[in-house]
Image (cartoon, rainbow, N blue to C red; front, side, top):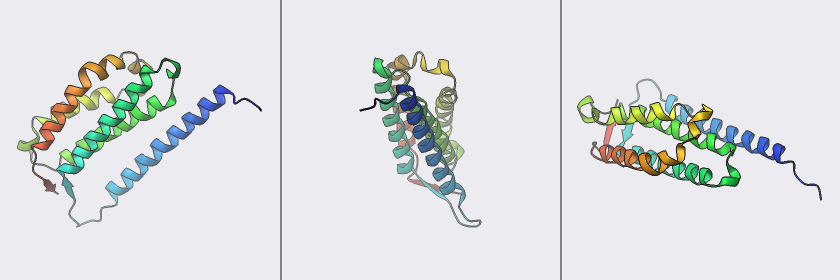
Length: 157
């Protein structure tokens, strides 16, 4: 039986990861921008907390991939980092539906996370990421979730 070339396998995996990431982004954008003129857009606190849980799960997946020494150059690292970055962008858009007084402590925390994750396409981004996952990210996500949970149940534009 022929053995699969590892370079071709990595290319196929990278292509699949990029396709999945792009299709999820297109689906999110379609849902966000298909809103018809004149109709009210409502954002729910529970939606935002689900996004936080999604970020936490993707970060957990990335951390597991980084811990696996045999899979150090996995194309899924970039895909998961892109998912986290996109989720933070979506969360930021949703947070802006609430009154300024309600989000004044939340926005700086969210912006710091977005600034960090926006560098996910830089190859040096991944060098010390294990330390970040172990010591910084859990507390930052906890603060973010705590502040989101204090928001009203919904907000409308």
